[in-house]
Length: 478
Image (cartoon, rainbow, N blue to C red; front, side, top):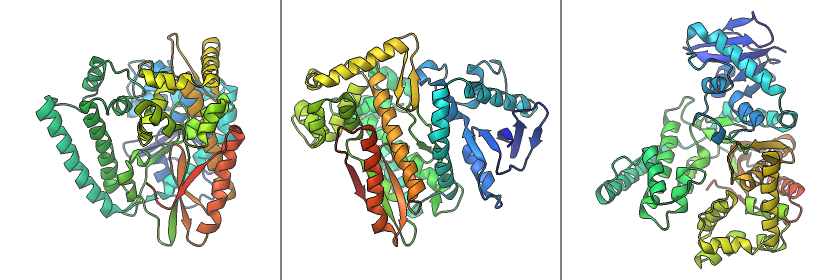
């Protein structure tokens, strides 16, 4: 096996053997037994597609996800906002701060990629075990889907784009004419507005706008504008991307967030609003199956905390009960979910009703205190299989959120791998936060559906035995 760091630049692939000092190649023909280190997985997969001889693929390690997993560091500990290979190499002091990538420095850059990989390989045994036992297999599944693409209705994508463009224009007009806001896309303005209103930033500006949209019209308009713009960008990308009109080819990142969530980029199918998800279609003689966990994080929290009241509520609906208590209306379930996530993230600006609601659950409060103490004592929290997150010198409020969401990712990935290994006629398409879109032949649909349901339920119960796990299943992606 040859271990290669690779880079695609100016229409050419460059690679360097990370175990020697002299093996440096241009347009090297990769072998099926190679291990390839990259941060350009989409480009690499397109390149590999041109080689028909592969019976088995080379092992691909995306260094963005590998860096996140092995260092266990969230964005709060990094000096840069967006991950890039160059910034990561500078952050780890492998390349000088003034290093510039050019044709003359490619060899040094590839050498730095190899140094980073070898360094991380020897740092966190629990994360290496997780990578070998789970993440590498997940990567194999998602990269094969990246190769084949996700079937879409291209004409519908165009029509949806036109509608979204009109709606974005309408919202911006209101912001300009009514509120004299002329540059709402500016992230600095968004941050300053939230700060001026006393709204604590939770997770992201988008999430914070969502949290306050019922109390603040500007927040409501900003939330709708950003969501519509993201959908517009994704739908536009579907129409312009390579590969023909029948499929889109997003980039899949197996360890896309610090909680190990699988994410998709360009286009971001996962973040499409429900009204725009209909752009995803099944191929001829196939049907879609969308399975997702019911009250996923709430159920995990109930089981891990062993709170009897919360466990009982899971059997009805935790979010509806929360909505009824806080808003006086059980139909405001989606708003209650925002309150729930704010609680997990340690948002101290929750209103009094929300605070009183969570204080009802004695065992939950004890569990939260236990997680906070673990963070204080060990400066990190994680799951039963790695995926730890470390904190810096400052006090943090996200410990409970990380434990629950990382546990959710672990349950989900175990279910995903079991279906891939045991029920391979169900073709994985899109990973969601708490579920999956599959494509299944009409011939096998009815027999596979209950088996897939059984796998997802079993994996949930393995980790959370205190609850009676539930899933939702549909033949449409909405």
